[in-house]
Length: 242
Image (cartoon, rainbow, N blue to C red; front, side, top):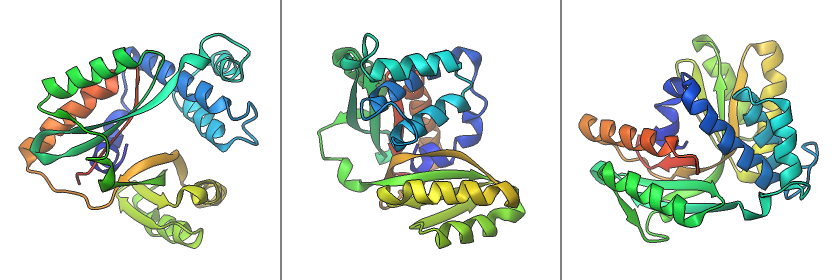
């Protein structure tokens, strides 16, 4: 997740429960299947490689991964019906959200997302009314010891990153979309000896100018993000807040 939704809640996302892990499998399987339409070999399909890495990070069994790849490559049932959709919304306190979904049922996805947004103090927005606040970028989250933050930042900049920001044991690296693979691989290679590791790497919506909210509104946005994240169809949420 971008901005606050990714940066401020990374740690509690790592404490995901077993009940939500099942939902993660559904989401990641859809990500793999859609990515595999562009080629079933992760070595030549970077989007698929990222999806498979995500699957491994949530301990998805190999047979599930293989089945999702086969489905996307046209060797199984159901992949053709999965679509990637983007929804825009306004949240509490004037926040803005871009919600990405992978679904085989557009009506269900929209209904569930709209209901969740409305129940949590937000409203759906017209296409384009929120998206202009964001750019599509490469996003890499690096885990490290606090004293390694400067080293990670310097390494990322040397590899061509557009922006870096560290907070304790996490560094957020922003790249141009076409530089994501190069920067990710360079940080992975450097981390073997330097003592850091890649937690996540993906193409993401990154807000151009973050907005600061009052604590009360921040909590409301966190609640909305958590409620959206539970939905099986929702794969990503970006916000414009700090």
